[in-house]
Length: 455
Image (cartoon, rainbow, N blue to C red; front, side):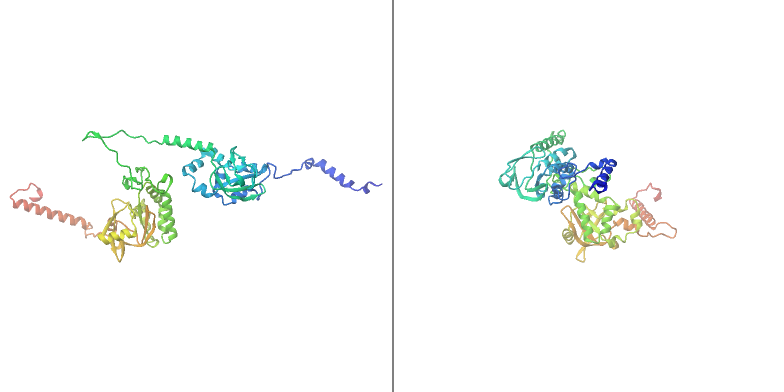
Protein backbone atom coordinates (compact mmCIF):
# COMPACT_ATOMS: atom_id res chain seq x y z
CA UNK A 1 0.00 0.00 0.00
CA UNK A 2 1.37 3.42 -0.95
CA UNK A 3 2.73 5.63 1.89
CA UNK A 4 0.76 8.60 0.70
CA UNK A 5 -2.46 6.65 1.04
CA UNK A 6 -2.00 6.14 4.77
CA UNK A 7 -4.32 8.62 6.49
CA UNK A 8 -2.62 11.16 8.83
CA UNK A 9 0.97 10.17 8.00
CA UNK A 10 1.80 13.42 6.22
CA UNK A 11 0.32 15.47 9.06
CA UNK A 12 2.32 13.48 11.62
CA UNK A 13 5.54 14.10 9.77
CA UNK A 14 4.90 17.83 9.62
CA UNK A 15 4.11 17.90 13.35
CA UNK A 16 7.35 16.04 14.25
CA UNK A 17 9.34 18.38 12.03
CA UNK A 18 7.90 21.49 13.76
CA UNK A 19 8.53 20.02 17.18
CA UNK A 20 12.18 19.44 16.34
CA UNK A 21 12.52 23.09 15.33
CA UNK A 22 10.48 24.60 18.21
CA UNK A 23 10.70 22.39 21.30
CA UNK A 24 9.26 25.20 23.43
CA UNK A 25 5.99 24.73 21.63
CA UNK A 26 5.32 21.71 23.83
CA UNK A 27 5.13 23.98 26.90
CA UNK A 28 1.61 25.26 27.20
CA UNK A 29 1.01 28.25 29.51
CA UNK A 30 -2.36 27.99 31.09
CA UNK A 31 -3.69 30.98 33.00
CA UNK A 32 -6.51 30.33 35.32
CA UNK A 33 -8.10 32.23 38.17
CA UNK A 34 -6.50 29.84 40.61
CA UNK A 35 -2.98 30.74 39.44
CA UNK A 36 -1.19 33.26 41.65
CA UNK A 37 0.17 35.05 38.58
CA UNK A 38 -3.21 35.39 36.95
CA UNK A 39 -4.48 38.92 36.43
CA UNK A 40 -7.64 40.16 38.14
CA UNK A 41 -10.51 40.48 35.72
CA UNK A 42 -13.12 43.21 35.68
CA UNK A 43 -15.62 40.99 37.49
CA UNK A 44 -13.43 40.66 40.58
CA UNK A 45 -14.64 41.58 44.06
CA UNK A 46 -11.70 44.01 44.40
CA UNK A 47 -12.81 45.97 41.33
CA UNK A 48 -16.32 45.99 42.73
CA UNK A 49 -15.00 47.36 46.06
CA UNK A 50 -13.12 50.19 44.36
CA UNK A 51 -16.19 51.09 42.28
CA UNK A 52 -18.70 50.73 45.13
CA UNK A 53 -20.15 53.44 47.35
CA UNK A 54 -17.79 52.38 50.16
CA UNK A 55 -15.39 55.08 49.03
CA UNK A 56 -13.78 55.70 52.44
CA UNK A 57 -12.80 52.05 52.81
CA UNK A 58 -11.51 51.86 49.24
CA UNK A 59 -9.41 54.99 49.81
CA UNK A 60 -7.89 53.54 52.98
CA UNK A 61 -7.05 50.28 51.16
CA UNK A 62 -5.15 52.24 48.52
CA UNK A 63 -3.33 54.36 51.13
CA UNK A 64 -2.35 51.22 53.03
CA UNK A 65 -0.83 49.74 49.81
CA UNK A 66 -2.82 46.52 50.18
CA UNK A 67 -4.04 46.11 46.61
CA UNK A 68 -1.21 43.77 45.59
CA UNK A 69 -1.67 41.58 48.67
CA UNK A 70 -5.41 41.38 48.10
CA UNK A 71 -4.90 40.54 44.42
CA UNK A 72 -2.67 37.63 45.41
CA UNK A 73 -5.26 36.49 47.95
CA UNK A 74 -8.13 36.66 45.47
CA UNK A 75 -6.09 34.65 42.98
CA UNK A 76 -6.03 31.69 45.40
CA UNK A 77 -9.07 32.17 47.66
CA UNK A 78 -12.56 33.52 47.67
CA UNK A 79 -12.79 36.38 50.16
CA UNK A 80 -15.41 38.09 52.27
CA UNK A 81 -15.17 41.83 53.02
CA UNK A 82 -17.00 43.36 55.97
CA UNK A 83 -17.14 46.98 54.76
CA UNK A 84 -17.87 49.82 57.21
CA UNK A 85 -20.06 52.57 55.80
CA UNK A 86 -18.65 55.96 54.85
CA UNK A 87 -20.42 57.51 57.82
CA UNK A 88 -18.73 55.06 60.19
CA UNK A 89 -15.30 55.95 58.82
CA UNK A 90 -15.81 59.68 58.28
CA UNK A 91 -18.21 61.03 60.88
CA UNK A 92 -18.25 58.52 63.69
CA UNK A 93 -14.51 57.85 63.73
CA UNK A 94 -12.45 59.77 66.26
CA UNK A 95 -10.41 62.46 64.40
CA UNK A 96 -7.32 61.72 66.48
CA UNK A 97 -7.56 58.00 65.69
CA UNK A 98 -8.01 58.66 61.96
CA UNK A 99 -5.03 61.02 62.01
CA UNK A 100 -3.06 58.29 63.78
CA UNK A 101 -3.92 55.76 61.06
CA UNK A 102 -2.91 58.07 58.21
CA UNK A 103 0.54 58.84 59.61
CA UNK A 104 3.29 57.05 57.62
CA UNK A 105 4.86 55.69 60.82
CA UNK A 106 1.63 53.82 61.62
CA UNK A 107 1.24 52.06 58.27
CA UNK A 108 1.41 48.62 59.91
CA UNK A 109 -1.48 49.52 62.23
CA UNK A 110 -3.57 50.69 59.26
CA UNK A 111 -2.86 47.49 57.36
CA UNK A 112 -3.73 45.35 60.37
CA UNK A 113 -6.99 47.22 60.86
CA UNK A 114 -8.09 46.81 57.24
CA UNK A 115 -7.06 43.16 56.95
CA UNK A 116 -9.12 42.37 60.04
CA UNK A 117 -12.21 43.14 57.91
CA UNK A 118 -11.33 40.56 55.23
CA UNK A 119 -11.54 36.78 55.54
CA UNK A 120 -10.04 34.25 53.05
CA UNK A 121 -13.32 32.39 52.74
CA UNK A 122 -16.71 32.99 51.19
CA UNK A 123 -19.26 33.67 53.93
CA UNK A 124 -22.85 34.18 52.89
CA UNK A 125 -25.72 35.57 54.90
CA UNK A 126 -27.02 32.03 55.61
CA UNK A 127 -23.72 30.67 56.89
CA UNK A 128 -23.57 28.35 59.86
CA UNK A 129 -20.02 29.37 60.75
CA UNK A 130 -19.71 31.08 64.11
CA UNK A 131 -15.99 31.92 64.16
CA UNK A 132 -13.72 32.93 61.31
CA UNK A 133 -10.09 34.04 61.03
CA UNK A 134 -9.24 37.19 59.09
CA UNK A 135 -6.19 37.99 56.96
CA UNK A 136 -4.67 39.69 60.00
CA UNK A 137 -4.99 36.47 62.07
CA UNK A 138 -7.77 37.95 64.20
CA UNK A 139 -10.87 35.95 65.10
CA UNK A 140 -14.33 37.29 64.35
CA UNK A 141 -17.47 36.06 66.06
CA UNK A 142 -20.47 35.71 63.74
CA UNK A 143 -24.09 35.56 64.87
CA UNK A 144 -26.88 33.45 63.49
CA UNK A 145 -27.98 34.49 59.98
CA UNK A 146 -25.04 36.92 59.99
CA UNK A 147 -26.86 39.76 61.75
CA UNK A 148 -23.76 40.89 63.68
CA UNK A 149 -19.99 40.58 63.36
CA UNK A 150 -18.34 41.03 66.74
CA UNK A 151 -19.81 44.33 67.97
CA UNK A 152 -20.82 45.59 64.51
CA UNK A 153 -24.26 45.18 63.02
CA UNK A 154 -24.57 43.90 59.45
CA UNK A 155 -26.78 46.51 57.80
CA UNK A 156 -26.46 45.35 54.17
CA UNK A 157 -25.77 41.63 53.80
CA UNK A 158 -24.61 40.48 50.36
CA UNK A 159 -24.58 44.06 49.13
CA UNK A 160 -22.03 43.10 46.43
CA UNK A 161 -21.51 39.56 45.19
CA UNK A 162 -18.95 38.34 42.67
CA UNK A 163 -17.66 34.88 41.73
CA UNK A 164 -14.55 35.38 43.87
CA UNK A 165 -16.06 37.12 46.89
CA UNK A 166 -18.83 39.00 48.66
CA UNK A 167 -19.16 42.32 50.52
CA UNK A 168 -21.33 42.80 53.61
CA UNK A 169 -22.01 46.34 54.84
CA UNK A 170 -21.53 46.96 58.59
CA UNK A 171 -22.32 50.01 60.70
CA UNK A 172 -19.02 50.40 62.57
CA UNK A 173 -15.31 49.72 62.42
CA UNK A 174 -13.91 46.39 63.65
CA UNK A 175 -11.06 47.45 65.91
CA UNK A 176 -8.40 44.84 66.78
CA UNK A 177 -6.98 45.02 70.27
CA UNK A 178 -3.41 45.36 68.97
CA UNK A 179 -4.27 48.49 66.97
CA UNK A 180 -6.13 50.00 69.92
CA UNK A 181 -3.19 49.37 72.25
CA UNK A 182 -0.77 50.90 69.75
CA UNK A 183 -2.94 54.02 69.44
CA UNK A 184 -3.26 54.44 73.22
CA UNK A 185 0.48 53.99 73.66
CA UNK A 186 1.30 56.62 71.01
CA UNK A 187 -1.28 59.02 72.45
CA UNK A 188 0.17 58.66 75.96
CA UNK A 189 3.67 59.39 74.71
CA UNK A 190 2.44 62.41 72.76
CA UNK A 191 0.59 63.83 75.75
CA UNK A 192 3.67 63.44 77.92
CA UNK A 193 5.96 65.11 75.37
CA UNK A 194 3.47 67.93 74.77
CA UNK A 195 3.46 69.20 78.36
CA UNK A 196 4.14 72.92 78.29
CA UNK A 197 6.75 73.98 80.86
CA UNK A 198 5.49 76.52 83.35
CA UNK A 199 7.65 79.55 84.21
CA UNK A 200 8.73 80.48 87.69
CA UNK A 201 6.07 82.29 89.74
CA UNK A 202 6.22 86.09 89.63
CA UNK A 203 6.24 88.21 92.78
CA UNK A 204 4.50 91.57 93.00
CA UNK A 205 7.20 94.04 94.20
CA UNK A 206 4.60 96.20 95.95
CA UNK A 207 2.89 93.53 98.03
CA UNK A 208 5.67 90.89 97.98
CA UNK A 209 3.05 88.31 97.14
CA UNK A 210 2.75 85.93 94.26
CA UNK A 211 0.92 87.35 91.28
CA UNK A 212 -2.29 85.60 90.42
CA UNK A 213 -2.28 83.94 87.01
CA UNK A 214 -4.56 85.57 84.43
CA UNK A 215 -7.93 83.88 83.92
CA UNK A 216 -8.08 81.46 80.99
CA UNK A 217 -9.35 82.85 77.72
CA UNK A 218 -12.89 81.98 76.80
CA UNK A 219 -13.36 79.78 73.73
CA UNK A 220 -13.53 81.91 70.60
CA UNK A 221 -12.17 85.06 72.27
CA UNK A 222 -9.76 87.31 70.38
CA UNK A 223 -6.02 86.96 71.10
CA UNK A 224 -4.53 89.41 73.56
CA UNK A 225 -1.71 90.31 71.18
CA UNK A 226 -2.65 93.11 68.73
CA UNK A 227 -3.12 91.94 65.20
CA UNK A 228 -0.40 94.26 63.93
CA UNK A 229 2.21 92.36 65.97
CA UNK A 230 1.06 89.08 64.43
CA UNK A 231 1.30 90.26 60.83
CA UNK A 232 4.11 89.47 58.40
CA UNK A 233 6.96 90.21 57.78
CA UNK A 234 8.88 88.41 60.47
CA UNK A 235 7.93 85.46 62.66
CA UNK A 236 4.50 85.39 64.19
CA UNK A 237 4.36 86.55 67.79
CA UNK A 238 0.73 85.59 68.19
CA UNK A 239 -0.29 83.09 70.87
CA UNK A 240 -1.57 79.61 70.16
CA UNK A 241 -4.67 79.34 67.93
CA UNK A 242 -7.85 80.32 69.69
CA UNK A 243 -10.25 77.45 70.32
CA UNK A 244 -13.11 77.38 67.88
CA UNK A 245 -15.64 75.09 66.21
CA UNK A 246 -13.69 74.20 63.06
CA UNK A 247 -10.32 72.78 62.16
CA UNK A 248 -8.18 70.15 63.88
CA UNK A 249 -8.27 70.10 67.67
CA UNK A 250 -11.35 72.36 67.49
CA UNK A 251 -9.32 75.38 66.34
CA UNK A 252 -10.29 77.80 63.60
CA UNK A 253 -9.22 76.59 60.16
CA UNK A 254 -8.29 79.95 58.70
CA UNK A 255 -6.86 78.55 55.47
CA UNK A 256 -10.12 76.79 54.65
CA UNK A 257 -12.20 79.86 55.54
CA UNK A 258 -10.09 82.13 53.31
CA UNK A 259 -10.41 79.65 50.43
CA UNK A 260 -14.16 79.58 50.97
CA UNK A 261 -14.55 83.35 50.77
CA UNK A 262 -12.29 83.57 47.67
CA UNK A 263 -14.37 80.86 45.96
CA UNK A 264 -17.47 82.79 46.98
CA UNK A 265 -16.08 85.92 45.30
CA UNK A 266 -15.46 83.98 42.10
CA UNK A 267 -18.89 82.37 42.08
CA UNK A 268 -20.60 85.63 43.03
CA UNK A 269 -19.22 87.32 39.92
CA UNK A 270 -17.72 90.75 39.42
CA UNK A 271 -14.83 90.35 41.90
CA UNK A 272 -12.34 88.28 39.92
CA UNK A 273 -9.66 90.99 39.99
CA UNK A 274 -9.81 91.19 43.78
CA UNK A 275 -9.44 87.41 44.09
CA UNK A 276 -6.56 87.43 41.60
CA UNK A 277 -4.64 90.04 43.61
CA UNK A 278 -5.15 88.13 46.87
CA UNK A 279 -3.96 84.80 45.43
CA UNK A 280 -1.59 85.49 42.52
CA UNK A 281 -0.24 89.05 42.73
CA UNK A 282 0.29 88.87 46.50
CA UNK A 283 0.34 86.22 49.22
CA UNK A 284 -2.28 87.91 51.37
CA UNK A 285 -4.54 84.85 51.25
CA UNK A 286 -1.90 82.88 53.18
CA UNK A 287 -1.38 85.66 55.71
CA UNK A 288 -5.13 86.15 56.20
CA UNK A 289 -5.57 82.42 56.72
CA UNK A 290 -2.86 82.42 59.38
CA UNK A 291 -4.39 85.39 61.18
CA UNK A 292 -7.85 83.79 61.23
CA UNK A 293 -6.34 80.52 62.49
CA UNK A 294 -4.75 82.44 65.36
CA UNK A 295 -8.14 83.80 66.42
CA UNK A 296 -8.36 87.18 64.68
CA UNK A 297 -11.40 88.41 62.74
CA UNK A 298 -11.34 90.40 59.50
CA UNK A 299 -13.70 92.50 57.38
CA UNK A 300 -12.71 92.84 53.73
CA UNK A 301 -13.93 95.80 51.66
CA UNK A 302 -13.73 94.24 48.20
CA UNK A 303 -13.69 96.60 45.18
CA UNK A 304 -15.53 95.17 42.18
CA UNK A 305 -13.90 94.54 38.80
CA UNK A 306 -15.08 97.87 37.37
CA UNK A 307 -13.33 99.75 40.16
CA UNK A 308 -10.16 97.63 39.96
CA UNK A 309 -9.93 98.30 36.21
CA UNK A 310 -9.37 102.01 36.96
CA UNK A 311 -6.07 101.28 38.73
CA UNK A 312 -3.09 102.31 36.65
CA UNK A 313 0.02 100.25 36.03
CA UNK A 314 2.11 102.70 38.04
CA UNK A 315 -0.10 102.21 41.09
CA UNK A 316 0.45 98.43 41.01
CA UNK A 317 4.04 98.20 39.71
CA UNK A 318 5.81 99.76 42.70
CA UNK A 319 7.23 97.22 45.17
CA UNK A 320 4.71 96.50 47.89
CA UNK A 321 2.01 98.66 46.31
CA UNK A 322 -0.59 95.87 45.83
CA UNK A 323 -0.15 94.76 49.45
CA UNK A 324 -0.54 98.31 50.76
CA UNK A 325 -3.69 98.85 48.70
CA UNK A 326 -5.22 95.62 49.98
CA UNK A 327 -4.18 96.31 53.59
CA UNK A 328 -6.18 99.54 53.47
CA UNK A 329 -9.27 97.50 52.50
CA UNK A 330 -9.02 95.06 55.45
CA UNK A 331 -10.53 96.04 58.81
CA UNK A 332 -9.40 94.03 61.87
CA UNK A 333 -12.98 93.78 63.13
CA UNK A 334 -16.00 91.69 62.23
CA UNK A 335 -18.53 94.04 60.66
CA UNK A 336 -21.63 93.33 58.62
CA UNK A 337 -23.71 95.65 56.48
CA UNK A 338 -26.22 96.01 59.30
CA UNK A 339 -23.64 96.81 61.99
CA UNK A 340 -21.85 99.40 59.86
CA UNK A 341 -25.07 101.07 58.72
CA UNK A 342 -26.36 101.26 62.29
CA UNK A 343 -23.04 102.79 63.39
CA UNK A 344 -23.03 105.54 60.75
CA UNK A 345 -26.72 106.24 61.38
CA UNK A 346 -26.04 106.74 65.08
CA UNK A 347 -22.64 108.47 65.09
CA UNK A 348 -22.54 110.17 61.68
CA UNK A 349 -18.92 109.36 60.82
CA UNK A 350 -17.07 106.28 61.98
CA UNK A 351 -13.34 105.71 61.60
CA UNK A 352 -12.33 102.06 61.24
CA UNK A 353 -8.80 100.83 61.78
CA UNK A 354 -7.16 99.08 58.84
CA UNK A 355 -4.23 96.72 58.53
CA UNK A 356 -2.32 99.61 56.97
CA UNK A 357 -1.12 101.54 59.98
CA UNK A 358 -1.74 104.31 60.90
CA UNK A 359 -4.39 104.98 58.28
CA UNK A 360 -8.08 104.66 59.04
CA UNK A 361 -10.99 104.42 56.66
CA UNK A 362 -13.90 106.81 57.24
CA UNK A 363 -17.47 105.59 56.88
CA UNK A 364 -20.60 107.72 56.82
CA UNK A 365 -24.21 107.48 55.73
CA UNK A 366 -25.04 108.59 52.21
CA UNK A 367 -28.13 107.92 50.11
CA UNK A 368 -29.41 105.23 52.45
CA UNK A 369 -26.14 103.29 52.29
CA UNK A 370 -22.63 103.34 53.75
CA UNK A 371 -20.06 105.52 52.04
CA UNK A 372 -16.34 104.98 52.59
CA UNK A 373 -13.68 107.63 52.05
CA UNK A 374 -14.33 111.19 50.95
CA UNK A 375 -14.37 113.26 47.79
CA UNK A 376 -13.54 111.67 44.48
CA UNK A 377 -11.89 108.71 46.17
CA UNK A 378 -15.03 107.55 47.95
CA UNK A 379 -16.83 104.24 47.47
CA UNK A 380 -20.30 103.00 48.34
CA UNK A 381 -21.28 99.71 49.91
CA UNK A 382 -22.43 98.07 46.69
CA UNK A 383 -22.87 94.34 47.44
CA UNK A 384 -23.48 93.79 51.16
CA UNK A 385 -22.60 90.59 53.02
CA UNK A 386 -21.11 88.65 50.12
CA UNK A 387 -19.52 86.29 52.66
CA UNK A 388 -20.06 86.17 56.42
CA UNK A 389 -19.03 83.20 58.56
CA UNK A 390 -18.43 84.80 61.95
CA UNK A 391 -14.68 85.21 61.38
CA UNK A 392 -14.43 86.78 57.91
CA UNK A 393 -16.86 89.32 56.46
CA UNK A 394 -16.68 90.44 52.84
CA UNK A 395 -18.47 93.62 51.75
CA UNK A 396 -18.48 94.65 48.09
CA UNK A 397 -17.75 98.31 47.26
CA UNK A 398 -17.76 100.18 43.95
CA UNK A 399 -14.40 101.96 44.26
CA UNK A 400 -10.78 101.56 45.31
CA UNK A 401 -9.96 103.41 48.51
CA UNK A 402 -6.75 105.34 49.22
CA UNK A 403 -5.66 107.08 52.43
CA UNK A 404 -6.28 110.81 52.52
CA UNK A 405 -2.54 111.57 52.67
CA UNK A 406 -1.96 109.78 49.37
CA UNK A 407 -4.87 111.55 47.73
CA UNK A 408 -3.44 114.91 48.78
CA UNK A 409 0.02 113.91 47.57
CA UNK A 410 -1.33 113.07 44.13
CA UNK A 411 -2.70 116.55 43.67
CA UNK A 412 -0.53 119.17 41.94
CA UNK A 413 1.01 121.55 44.48
CA UNK A 414 0.93 125.31 43.58
CA UNK A 415 4.29 126.75 42.59
CA UNK A 416 5.31 130.45 42.57
CA UNK A 417 6.87 132.31 39.67
CA UNK A 418 10.36 131.71 41.10
CA UNK A 419 9.78 127.99 41.08
CA UNK A 420 9.57 127.61 44.89
CA UNK A 421 6.86 125.67 46.61
CA UNK A 422 4.09 128.01 47.72
CA UNK A 423 3.55 125.95 50.87
CA UNK A 424 7.07 126.69 52.12
CA UNK A 425 6.57 130.43 51.51
CA UNK A 426 3.36 130.41 53.53
CA UNK A 427 5.13 128.68 56.41
CA UNK A 428 7.96 131.25 56.37
CA UNK A 429 5.44 134.09 56.30
CA UNK A 430 3.58 132.66 59.30
CA UNK A 431 6.83 132.26 61.25
CA UNK A 432 7.71 135.93 60.56
CA UNK A 433 4.34 137.08 61.83
CA UNK A 434 4.70 135.05 65.03
CA UNK A 435 8.20 136.40 65.68
CA UNK A 436 7.04 139.99 65.13
CA UNK A 437 4.17 139.51 67.59
CA UNK A 438 6.53 138.06 70.23
CA UNK A 439 8.93 141.00 69.95
CA UNK A 440 6.05 143.46 70.31
CA UNK A 441 4.85 141.71 73.49
CA UNK A 442 8.34 141.83 75.02
CA UNK A 443 8.60 145.55 74.26
CA UNK A 444 5.21 146.22 75.82
CA UNK A 445 6.29 144.68 79.14
CA UNK A 446 9.60 146.59 79.10
CA UNK A 447 11.71 143.53 78.37
CA UNK A 448 14.69 143.82 76.06
CA UNK A 449 14.93 140.80 73.84
CA UNK A 450 18.29 139.16 73.31
CA UNK A 451 17.18 137.72 69.97
CA UNK A 452 18.89 139.26 66.97
CA UNK A 453 15.60 139.05 65.08
CA UNK A 454 14.01 141.61 67.44
CA UNK A 455 16.81 144.18 67.00
